Image 1 (cartoon, rainbow, N blue to C red):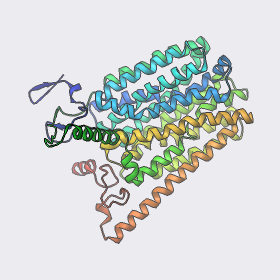
Image 2 (image 1 turned 60 degrees about the horizontal axis):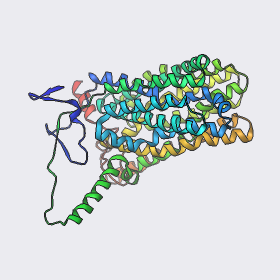
Image 3 (image 1 turned 90 degrees about the vertical axis):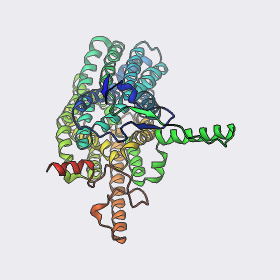
Length: 494
């Protein structure tokens, strides 16, 4: 309970009121504290990302056992992490509805329950189809309900330090890649895959603890009086309310209007969707590839842990570096350059499957991955208004889910037909590098076009953001590469 203007207020009551207009009692927008309890929320977000985003990549440790247990092909087995990752992103609209109705705190805790229950139930499955439902759908949906609200609430707690906060939160994925493979390999050695799934289900319940500390940010809100038209008939009122509700739901949970009107968001969404076709596949097939060429399973699991360690070491300094004023408006180019290096690094696996070669691969892959992970959400927040971020993230997640779903099975088909894993890494290299070039050239073209428009209309470039929506001279984006409220605050301090 909190006290506000002499009244006792329950923090849970400040959440969004469904299906009605809400107005802050104070009449003003809530500013991001950039500290205080936000640091606790940041730590909780790091742990949530460690338990969700990194988890599907560690399924490769149990890949061979699942093949033997269910007499499945590479294509059939690859559907397990594929479904888990795809549902993690495809559940975005459902997650957005839950966040609006119950808040980020409750949604994260619900996700912890679902993911823990799904993995625990997976230990009792008898067919590969049952594993698709428990480990793929239920666990993946739980990951979605935990991951997306955690990222969303972090964006509200930080404004001036947002790039740093996003970079620090992305270390959660690295932390998971560092710890979960070692934990999974140890559990696999001691308990087998069924016992491992049961214990990992209990570990995933810690998302509930993380969600409990994500208290809502903002003042108490009240319901506004609904607008009524007394001359309408009952049928007209019903039709109008249905149309209004559908439009409002699509606007809140799936940003189709942004995809139509904001060219920068459209290009970024296409590039990220393209990227996801080959971005996570190498992490799933790295352990099977190494063990297929005679590497000890503990050494192959160690490669994933080293990948996580590289990310942990690289992401915090990267967050501080990219938070500097000289990178304002240039985050997308740093992101696409790192993505290009990340894609090309997959070609290293085609050289040899020895530990030394794969070690060099995971170091280069990890360094570039740390930059990609640090800036992915920062770039997205930079091309649209923060109030539209949950809807934009939800739509982007749905688009990603398609390529995330088909990527691993397509790689499995390639392995089944060729009998070689290195073709997978070569193909992923081309896909990810191609998406990086697409994003870089798209934003370069947009910047040149907008600069030409500004010069033609003789508008001083320093007072208008270069991040213009498609065809619009005045960007609606609050968080852009021009002086924002956070920049003004910094200027007042100096």
